[in-house]
Length: 407
Image (cartoon, rainbow, N blue to C red; front, side, top):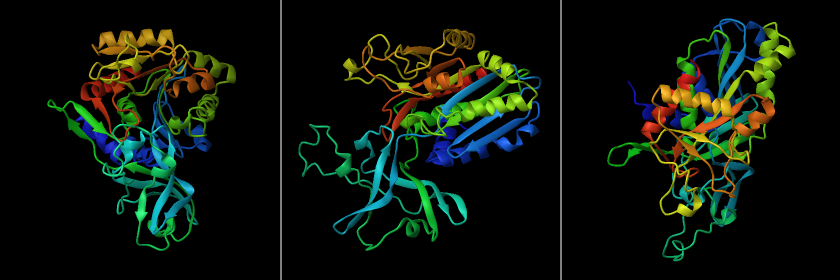
């Protein structure tokens, strides 16, 4: 049996951006593909796959009439660099990529790393995914001999320093030339760290990689939906969103009405009316699964003393009274019952009082869909770094819990 962390690493390596992630998930699951135009063809007990750009939805129809939705939601975007509309900037004899951040990256962790160019383009032949493994790029750091205060200060000016080096030889350079596409019309391209994941620590229990936020949760959802059996009355679904790191405000993000529209269309084509659909929503559950901040020694003042998350301590149940996380008391009780029954460890997280915290897809789903929603996950260290870390026990706990959600 392939270890979980190796399967996760394979998923990450094949999914440098949301578009490639969708393709990887589609191939791994092998569910029947469908579009909103073929909703009438849905059959009881069958498994289906719907994709829209950097978003996808895998679900299993119940064997009988739909009475509820049981949904797990994650996101498949991560903090990254993206090419601007004019993708190059020239400084003297050197040419760099002109980039902007997508999400809150930790700038210095991205310096001096091999970066892969990948994403989606449009040519005169249509849409196409691209991945330039033949040429890697990097952002040079300023040496300590020149900037002797580098270790004493943490200031970083992305407008001046966030420059992925392209070439010092070419007088003219273009994306079409780099990608070997003569009729390039438009692009949505990412630069992301390409280094493979690895086990660290004396006991080889810590797995380090780029994109653990939030591909580890997406991996657990994939594992769960791939092994799930059709439920008698619940539509089982795994949703993989794009654009969470930038606020979910897109047609592929959790703020979009696309998913709830699709769920309603499924019900309508199954012979139900809107009133029945609204009743189904009220009986449903949405589990928003995303990583949480593990405690970092030396930074005690930045963490809630009573809610410090440790690696290896299992599932994290989140609560934020400013509603940066979704919360539902009945769903929490159900999760706790499952955790106790299956002897899965857990811990609770709350942010430092009065301090802002990150958010998830959870609040967007709760407001947009009107479905009871709760935020859970596992703890990782160095969130939004080019190299994040999780504990193998936590990954196992998450996969176990996700599978229980579909029982």
